[in-house]
Image (cartoon, rainbow, N blue to C red; front, side):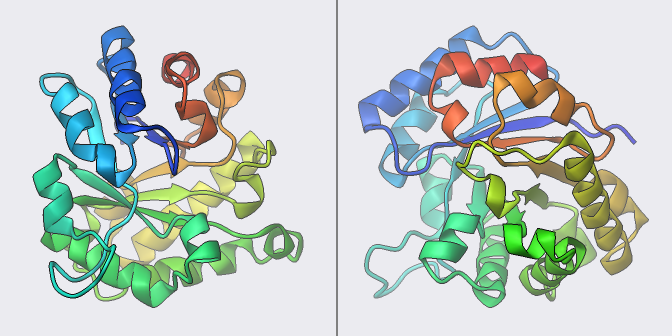
Length: 250
């Protein structure tokens, strides 16, 4: 089955509002491909201005996280309906940095996934193993545990709306990248689990992005593997030249 590629840029805690608008506009103006999806995830304060700047372009906008309550006394949090109203169509959930620095658990990932779906947002659910877990040959078990917890209770209809991002923790911001075989094998394991948990249609249709030091020089090899349906890009998405280079290589 042919799955449409996606190249997503996670800007993390970078770029002022003006810088974000300028970067998004540069990507949109120089984008030459219409056969894949391109997405940017700016900081929360830049989502609305970036979405306005991209109006009429094919670029998609995502939040980098969300809380599972729509409103209330939850200081400094942001909800699905607020992201949607600001112009986001997607939201990243369970990124390794959220797990590492902000005590994200499978339970809270699950709550956020459910809230995103209820708000009409497409969740990009991140999973991945540490270096110690890979060296102990625990990769498949870790991925299955994260998927089982994070996607608990979802229906077939909800599962069909998900995007999964495989991001080996040892390759995030380190300059290290999973080999093409390592990435494809992990993606194949995720895909097979989705088939066992849901059904063959979900297994065949779910898009699985690779995240972990993706750059123009290694993008082509990674993104042309059978089970790799795109990239979740960190540092290399912070300049239009590098991000467009990855897009062109896909």
